[in-house]
Image (tube, rainbow, N blue to C red; front, side):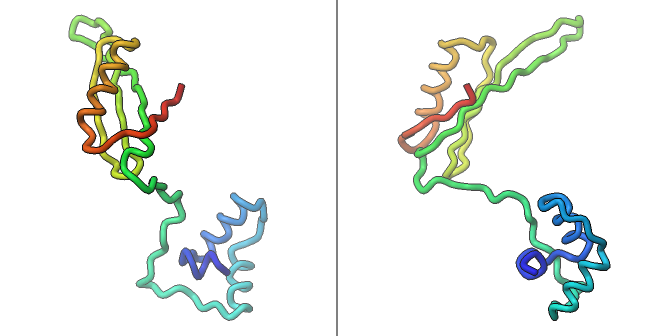
Length: 133
């Protein structure tokens, strides 16, 4: 019932939701009859459903939590050589401000240089940094 009221899902989507998240296998017509029996009216044609995807979280202050990640890039030259580059990215969880820089090597000096770059780029003090490794 909440799926219909809160997310504006039709019978087919409720059926798929029950199968996927609760391992309940019922037909679309059974969902329809259950909704009808409980006095829930069909959806209006003009009403679109709300997205059920994950909600983005945000910290309460800028700089409280900054995520840093490194992406490995491979380029192919016209001569057939492979060139590796490393893209460093930092994103603040409150403001969604991003800093991005590409380096030729992935080492300690590149990481230190990037963190100095981030500290100068962001208009607030950084309290915590989270990385994958």
